[in-house]
Image 1 (cartoon, rainbow over the protein chains, first blue to last red):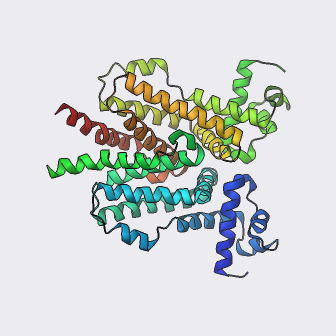
Image 2: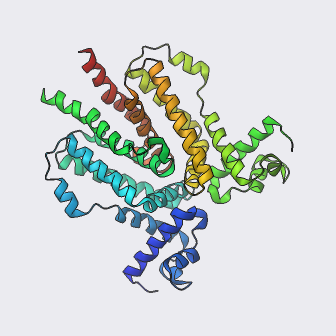
Image 3: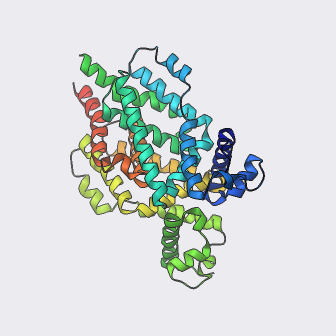
Length: 196
Length: 196
């Protein structure tokens, strides 16, 4: 079994495309080989079985959504107020917009996880840790709002993303404006109340 | 082609079970016949093709989530404050909890709609109308909050439901408490600010 990290990543990216385009139904090792333009059998050299492939697709979707460190550092030079929270959440939404395939693949994995206990356990662990990381980042950065605010913000943005991916006409491009309203209504008043 | 409404509903409920349990991959007319315990070929008497079946499954999931009119009337005897909004949203969440199959089937349909333009168009239309109905109900009932608040509340609850269905360990049973926090933070303060 070979271990070329770049090829592994290319195969996972190909698997994400297949998953987004054809759903769980279309995801076969052979389809991934074809999508990646590699000889038939390559994928099975890298992933012992479908379950292993699914777990690594999940990790790859998380990797793809990592913010650009330079952009993040630049964003964080702004005052730590609810406008900055809105800007960070709009960036989360924009990363989704730029990686629809990655998010659609993740939704497919979530549904598959509801059926495959092993994948489900992995998803629960990874997404719970991700939420905890988001909470810690928010609080450690000194942004306004408490732990519960961060959870509520992320749930609402998560709901927006699912709608934008699957029924885009419902929010009809208003997600960024809704993020501004949400942070102002949730954190703007709270902050004023605290300051008063 | 026969048109027995009860049998049609039974077939759609069977299709929802198949979809929730096996995903889009497992949804064949034959699998629905087996799930419903009817002779092979019954389903194809009722639904001309897969696309028609999918559209009617969607309508059936909406029907199953309709609140019980007596429960709703009873709930609405309470004062029109943010506690009542929380109670109504907790009821939405509880209906999901009692109909996991219906919600999982709807998520499968949303993903399939991202791939099938005809189904996607239908989903966009139905879910946009549903949001509009929710907004009108909220405003006409005299509940606190404006149009944007209603949209934000529904997006957050939608995010909770997707998490509870697919990664239940993340919110770990806290969704009802989070709904209380959300309505208090979004509408409780707003109302106090208006009253002040």
